[in-house]
Image (cartoon, rainbow, N blue to C red; front, side, top):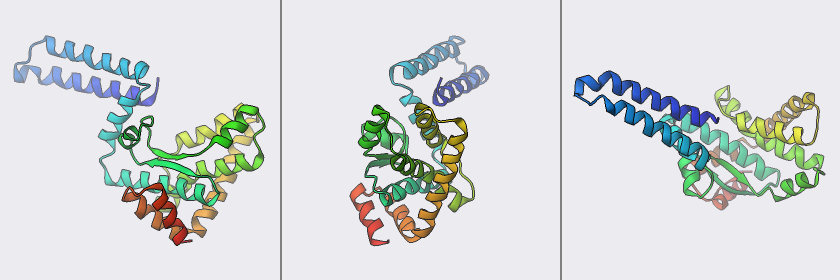
Length: 225
């Protein structure tokens, strides 16, 4: 079960517990907590199997994303992906800084930067992924984590980014020892790109914060290289 589904179930259990404790104070019928339990867990099940957890993702994002510090971290993380992808010639198709933004764009309810990765998908399907393409995408995927570490000293996001690298190398039947090596090398390349283009990165962060279009973000990068 996805972490978001577990989170929504935890939220449901918390709400039910509160209703049981406070019910007598507000003269709530004893059946109310039972009905609430059935409805909330039913919705969680429906969300998991019918909507692939998108509802839970949006709810958890709304409840946990109100902190300005967290929003800023996400912004700096995604700007790292965007800048490095642009510098490596990987076109960015869209970006979203929250689950609800992604949902409004018609994407699955996951925030992030999306790339035009037809070449990657085609080569993976044929089983002939070139080292150059692999290194480029590994660098882009690790760039968000690296950007967070540069700005904040540590990274809170990036689990999915590491998972992508692991999944591809596993699909290519590479040894486990190569996975960590690829992540380390990609992190070094991403760090060099971000540090060498600091002004472009900072300008991109400001532009993305305004929810500018992809074209406007690319123009900002070019103007500050």
